[in-house]
Length: 343
Image 1 (cartoon, rainbow, N blue to C red):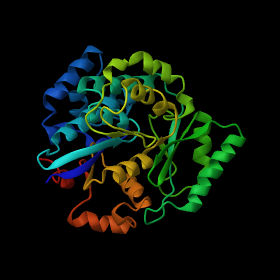
Image 2: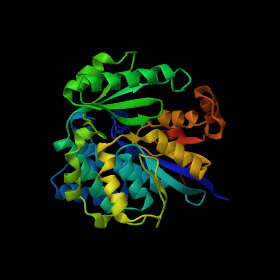
Image 3: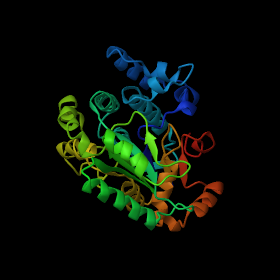
Image 4: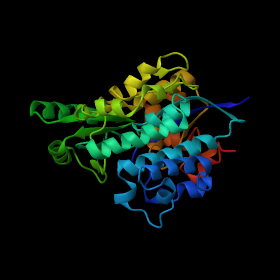
């Protein structure tokens, strides 16, 4: 009997210096799919995916902006998805973080590979050219990856204070035991000064706009104009969005998922925590696979699972112990784990 797996797709910021050469290292350069992406990008006068992945050195000014990073991450993630051994594993559902929703649509078959590429590349370009503000990450976790009620109260206090003072500060993403704020430039500066500090947080995300907040209301009509509804279909695998809604194959109309993807998903909070929890509870996977590139989503996924007690998970130490012998969470961005589910 095949094992059931839930697939989680990565968002922006997951292709960093350590991921340089990801396609070459794990997928022999990417084959025909990457060749199609290269042709598409070359036709637009953009650096090709092969050139970006095959660069001699990683450059933040080249690899990190959305107009380049988005499709590069798409190429890596979709290649990882194709590498899952379907003789041993049944993908029962897909979800993703932020931009990972677009990738989840492609994995689920709601959009085909080429339409998914156009969606990702177009939205990456729009955010790069028309986006405003930025994002700041802050941790609400205690040492054992539980959400600390005191820190939750601090987040609520920060939001209340910002609202009272008329600052443009919003919750962008609920990310496991972390929260991602979206803000305009003034709000970004205020958050970096106002939020309690430790050795890592608050963390400003470079080259990120104020995703999933009203600060991007102006992007919605541009996104509709640039992406045709005809690209969206009925899907083949259930997909869980950033509100926790399950879009089951043939159980929705194309206009509905199109409007969410290019509407609410852009300018309202993305609850990745809820998406993971709903997917895990509703589809009861044997394992959860996080597509590459990068490994930064592993902790938020585990924290979301701990928060809902999935399969009796009690905390970080418990999770790490279970990972040793037979990992329940497989990060395909980790060389030592990807072989668990690849052919």
